[in-house]
Image (cartoon, rainbow, N blue to C red; front, side, top):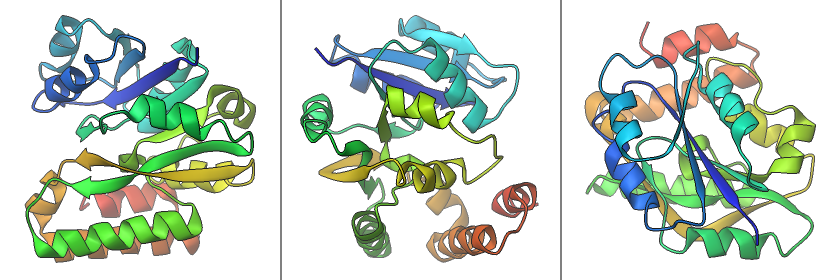
Length: 226
């Protein structure tokens, strides 16, 4: 039986982590690993109460935290999940069935943002179209990969931002990437905080800057409004 290890990097996620982990408790055939990057709130305590495998990282870096989680993972499939993202019903079977095609090395789900706004629906359409057409999903879509392929690639590159984009570009060279029809539901909190237009502009600026060779450190500063 194929075992899936779900790796969740966290940093001060007390408002969302319990709901995310509760959604995963419905399936006892998976391994859930939470990797904390130095939370100053109750994230660690809450994760402990949920009975998952908890790892403490010495550095707050999503890439390093996910790599560290992968070191402790025992599944033949690794699924990297954001702390504020819920997986769809039947996700395990969908992932396992996708790997019946030996050419597929990894994939992700379609995206749904948890906000009731028409502009958000348009963004979802564009994101899902881009993911399907170019085989470039982002981290908030629940990226999964064969663990053997992940380790051959050396995991995520240690970047302060765009580590998911960088990984997927490299993964595309290893084989086929599938975008499953089911949707993850991710929080719209950043869209609410900054507004749809500003968030969209910042996201596109980061992508453009990445292609133009702007340093990842500078891109991270732009993303965080510094």
